[in-house]
Image 1 (cartoon, one colour):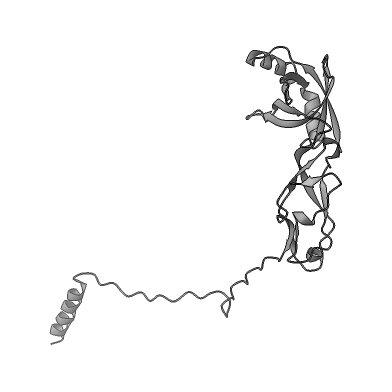
Image 2 (spheres, helix red, strand yellow):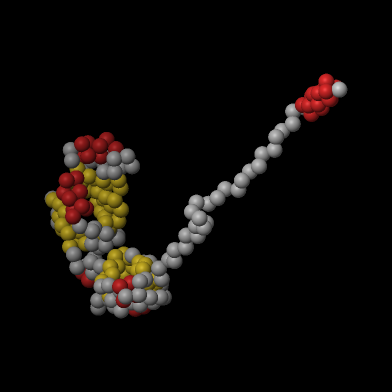
Length: 234
């Protein structure tokens, strides 16, 4: 199980004006939600938060919020509920956390990674298709795996690995449909044969015979010339 740590401070002022002032000073507003408790408004260091996001996979990972001056509970184990970004610049502008109990099972999504080289790809020329990239699991927060590795080395052409075929650590339960396909090896797509070239090289264009177009009155003029020539001979 991977655990991350993030410093936080209690946020006193609320409202748009206060939030803008926080961001100008290098902080990101945040809220922690907990069952049966009031939401807690916090402020986080923008620099530390961005560094955490860039260096770790934060989805489904416990983040321990070390809250300065919190008289009730200095460190709170949380999962990220939502991260809001600026639609124009893409910067993080707000974070929502869900506080969790380390002794109560929770549901999270974790990624699936393929391990090994499939026989159907390496020896039979097939192509590996990764159908399901993550699964929903249920377990204690302290038992959340970083990911689930699936051995594909014996996967042959036309074969698939389903949810029911995956082994998971003790205490972890996959909630997806047992019959859902996770990985499969499919046959390569056949390329269409190119059209045969015409014998003799380039394709011959049909010869077009153009007929002389008669101009109205031209036929009568020609007949007149012939008649005149005959008279002169006489």
